[in-house]
Amino acid sequence: MTATSSTTVTMPSTPSTPSTSSTPLLQAALPPLPAWRRKLRRLLGHRGLMLGTAILAVIVLAAIFAPLLAPHDPFDQDVTARLIPPVWQAQGSWEHILGTDKLGRDYLSRLIYGARVSLTIGIAAALISGLIGTTLGVLAGYFGGRTDAFISYLITTRLAMPVVLVALAMASLVGGSLKVVILLLGLLLWDRFAVVTRSATQQLRDAEFIAAAKAIGASTPYILLREILPNIMGALIVVVTLEMAHAILLEATLSFLGLGVQPPTPSWGLMVAEGKTYMFFKPWVIVIPGVALALLVLAINLVGDGMRDVNAPDGRN
Image (cartoon, rainbow, N blue to C red; front, side):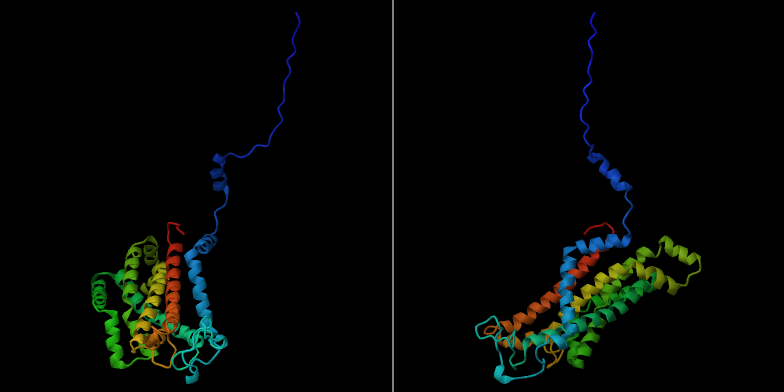
């Protein structure tokens, strides 16, 4: 009998590719990113936050470097050059890029210096109201009982008063000026700070780290300033941005009605008020400061919404 020989065919080996099922295992094996890198990735990935930050940075830099950027003195008057249109219109001039107002003052210069007024009022009013509201809210949320009842009564009383009407009444009695506007808005816009911090403090006062701080003998001021306040800072940042935008709009309203910043101080609300007579014939005199005001408020709100999303625990962008 003849034995048949069997031949073994060897197939060429091909490099093995990792299966998709092993991808989660590889990701699980990677070390977790540090907290600051995760937060930075969320910051850079939030389009609204980046857009608002860019617009706000441009306005802030323009306000800081106003003496270097403004082509003219914002207070210089030239009645022979009154109501010159912007450069993109037929009779515009590059000497006055955004034109001039009814007294011949350069509109671009007044717009740049007006950013200083709006930002100063927004920041100062938010700081004053934040100090008042945060103090009341933390005390009410931490102590509870009669303290909470009394502060809640103050918050309810404040919410019952219309901000615009009270501000108009007080400004008409005291007289409008930059300091008066800042003080009025600071004393009228603290309620949102109080409501938010009271609710956040009530959620934290029974936490384990607060109980641990009490167990080691930490004082009440230490717990409030070092334990509770840092943990509600994310919510406070959002409220600060909202109240800054609110204060800027209220200042523009008061200035438009003649009870806010007084002339010749450049204010965007005052610029709109001074140009309302010519709004049908020279619409740019109210469009330019109106657009600047809208951009500033939009940028602040975008930053506030972005900070809320970045600090959210659910990881949304």
